[in-house]
Amino acid sequence: MIKVTFVSADGTRRTVEIDEGLSAREAALFNSVPGIDGDCGGVCACATCHVHVDLAWMDRVGPPEEGGMESDLIQFAEGTTETSRLACQISMVPELDGLVLHLPELQH
Image 1: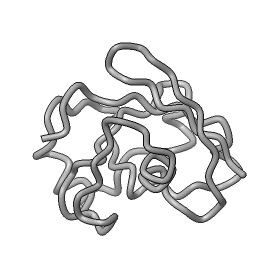
Image 2: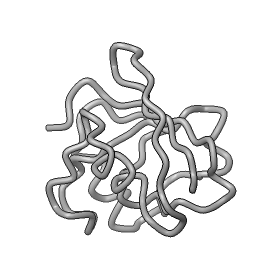
Image 3: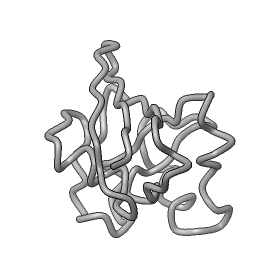
């Protein structure tokens, strides 16, 4: 199991566990983490699973692929920064055990 900590806009931290190979979106939804809607079912079509990767983890997670679906879609999310990613596109691998993701105030 891989641990992921979601930090809400008000600073509340919630650590959950998820199986390897699933996504950070699934980690949030399967554990009822508020602030991740994931309306499109994880197919990178809606940006309602927008997160900000903690700076300490950005090198391991990396940015969205330039010119890919995620980078094209994320430009429509509210409050994007250089650490913005879509949680549906972050595959949980052992190297990301302990990952910290910050949730934006709004997803729409």
